[in-house]
Image (cartoon, rainbow over all chains, first blue to last red):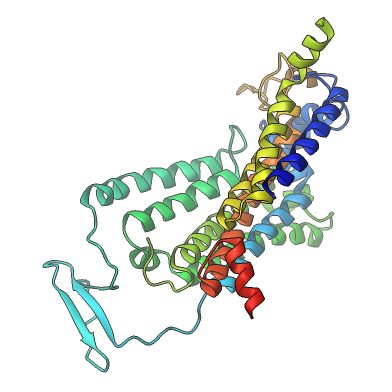
Length: 276
Length: 131
């Protein structure tokens, strides 16, 4: 099997390499990819949309329909992961563990026992709970706000510099994942609950598709942002720029929430109790 | 000889991606461990992303962001001065989609492990045959 696989892969690779003889050279400005549709994008972006970052303009405006379904793909990946792994029925345990945060004493409450008052001194923990590492926890707390600010900057400044909804959303999601790693899954769920995550990734796709539908209601084609000029009180070109920003915010929210829900599900195998 | 050398110099980028792609394909075909197969799939996707980004490259061109002044200085934009933005757009979405597919693949692997207590393909196979 090993040799068969190697020979098959080798033959396939040789065929591919033979095929590259006809390919345009590295960095050839006259290659077919650079001569058909992309010159239009490069030369007309500024007058059509007034967005200097051509990648953002093509992503959210010229190819907006494609990007909408990419967002839907990410949304359905989050849903699929949820359906595959999430265990809705909670296993009944005989006891619950609560930790008094000030003293570090752990209480074991037997079944039918009385809950501690829902004050801030107590936190629910699991059998596998390990003490927080002070250095990791402090560094995480210190660095997470800066990561989030940077993520918002990447989303908002996607028109003028490399960035946009996808990249900013991933960075924002990574900050929540970092919080969950440096603390534990329960404290992450207290900050960003599963329901809130589900709300966010629905909201993201809804913002995108809703912007498109709004354009139809205003009498233009689906995702033709220039129709938004009448409600944003700007000229049609600036309206396309603003439309791109609205859509990118939607993408950012959806990507962030899907990253978080993927992490939550994978790390606890759908039980949502103790993570890494 | 000189012809061969120019071919090698102008095409070596493709060869790199093909090698990377074949490493991923080999891992997907031969490796018995499901996680190794998933890693192979990721390498394969990365090779395709690299390939797309490289065909957008143009010599003596800059990144596809038009520099603009505050006075709205409208100087003509020539397509030869900027690299092709289209492959970047396509791969931007492909990267995020590959993360999403990776998440679903890992979820499936966790499900398989819960069912068979193993991620090795042959062990899972023998357990299926016994049933």
